[in-house]
Amino acid sequence: MKKIEIAPLFRRIVAAFMDAIFAFFLYFILVTYVATPIARKATTYDADVSDIYQYEISSHLYMWMQQDDTGKYQPIEVKDFSEKINNQYLQRVNETRNVGDFTLDQRIAHLQYYYTVYLTGDLTRVELPNNTESKTYDAVKDHFVSPHYLDKIDGKLPSEIYTKVYFNTKIMGLAPEGEENQSPYYSYPVVDDHVDYEGLPVLKEGANKDEAINDINKRLYDATKEFYYTDYMQSLQGNVRAIQLWCYIPTYLFVVGGLYILIPMLFKDGATLGKKTLGIAVISKLGYRAKKRQILFRQLIFLVEISFSLFIVGFGLTSIATLGIGAVIILIVMLTNKERRSPHDFAAMTLAIDEKTSVYFDNATEEERKQNRVNANLEKLNSYEPENANIIQVGSKIVDKDLKKKIDKKRGTSKKEK
Image 1: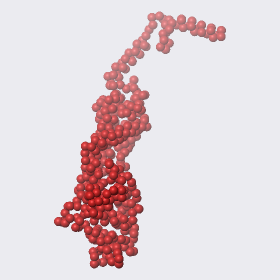
Image 2: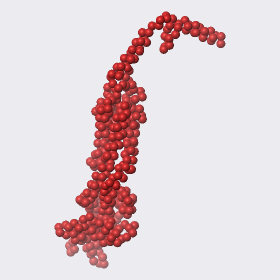
Image 3: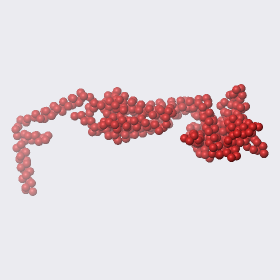
Image 4: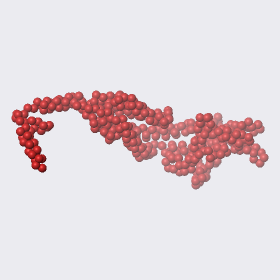
């Protein structure tokens, strides 16, 4: 009586995609309209993000660099924060443009600004975006303040250390006044026939411009790395990440718990929404209805398989390319066995079957009871003996033999007359 038809692989893949779409849609709705608004009101998220962006703006280190395979330092992008600072939520970059548009002099100016203005907290020299209405000292100090301008270094304030002379000699590698310049790329500017030892360094005569650009890119990279790894910046970023995790992880657990655990536990066939839609049921390996504990264990193992790569990506241990590694492993295992069982099927001793063409029972007792009932009916049917010898059975009908002959004869006569 029992008939088990394994669910086609293609249908299972489509069902998995449907479940993923359901999950993603629900997760997006909850994060966007529930978790994030609650976090923004109940935590310091907005203030921390605002501080991060303001520090980036005031430092002029929003020119992000990366080292390529050849060892050269290339720009990723430069962000235009002039609109971003007026954005209430401060979460989206409104405009990006290629850093390659910046000249060597502009890049040197950005680096000098970081050391001689931002680190010193010299607010009188802070450059504001063009759309800022007020450029007074009070307007500057309310929005663009170096977080450590009062922190003394070896008994000295930053403004006493990070001077333009310090920048030229220590950061750019130019020779101090009175010594011969040994820098391979830069030299002091000449103003009115005399050397300006506090001026912005310029490209040295005869120097390779491409190499000089790569050199200044590396110095920007080092400064940016130093900037983001300071205690105050790490603290802010840590707060933001912690708040984001408290938004994303509970929402993620709620979504997967509802769609991948609660719903299969409620359905008798242990199916998710995608499986239910495509007529796929989950039963035990023995061919009977799976127990609730089997369904629960199966779904938990499945979530571990899928979530493993998500958590790896989330903690930065690998790239986004590994996001689907769990699904790939599941597919490979299913292709290597005739029953198309996945790792979580093996763990829970279950099968995914075609519910429309399969016949299965709750347990062996139910199967035996129904089989006995069928056998009894067949035995009763086979042993039937009519009291009238003229009675015969034709298919499921019992008729009188003489009566049948008369009817057949009459039908034949009618056909001849026609």
